[in-house]
Length: 280
Image (tube, rainbow, N blue to C red):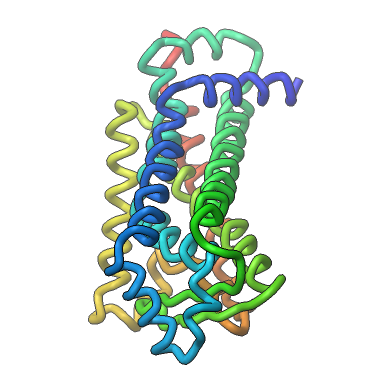
């Protein structure tokens, strides 16, 4: 019965209109950004200047992958946490608010199984959202820009990446694959708050607040020596795939810590949810 129950959770999740708010805003932001790169002289000249200052030919690296990547970073930094938290904070709290959770728990299914199925549905949503973000950005950028190499400049992480040929596509795909771990972890954080006795909006706001507090502390120069202690530092594991040489030991370290975060969020959420009186 695992697949029918998971299918039901996916049906409920993707049947809600608010599930598609994030995708719509992502696509709108990317479409506006790509049009500004194409039509506005200022953004285009700034991109060319950054590429030439790094010592690379601009005509070879002003491509669909480069433009899509430059738009991808701020979207992932600011919009992705918002919309995955919106979905994660909705999954349990909204059903408890509507009263449907009481009816579900009247059936012979454990609360642990119910939460795991809901979390798995949220993880699938996070994967679909990130992959659709990458596919749409490249598809739209390909309309206005030629295919070619990939140039990335991330000053906060001191990353200047330059890739050509099949390696450029491999790095772009790897970034999106490992970006899923950030989306799933933030969804799990909001999911944990959703298990508490609170409104869906409160669970979402709490998760976003935790993320932005850690991001602010992480980016302050005074706390540079403590960066690895903040959750955000490991959420950005995908940035390592823009480096010329991938530090696999850092990648594995961050993934293991993110796995610990997800497990901790699930345990806390289950412990609170198990103690709640929902059926009375």
